[in-house]
Amino acid sequence: MAATSSRLSNSPTTHQGIRDLDQPRQASRNDPMRVNVGDGERALSALGGGALLATGLARGGCTGLALIWSGAALLLRGVTGHCTVNEALGRTTA
Image (cartoon, rainbow, N blue to C red; front, side, top):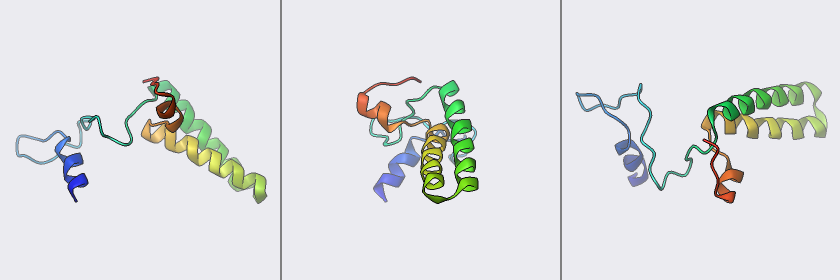
């Protein structure tokens, strides 16, 4: 429960004291999914991931499963803006 409250405390609030969903959440140093991918790269990752996922679903079999997993990973990278490889290398393209 403490992890949830700390994540919520980093969120901007309205003048009534409730979370403002129109404003981005403030990043903290201990955020496990810190954005480290730029906007253009995120868009390409999401588009490519969606295409791979759709191709994998249409193909089926072991090859299709591999395409589904690859597409899902790229889609997740595009949606969240977080790349575990960039994190492991200590770099950011954002």
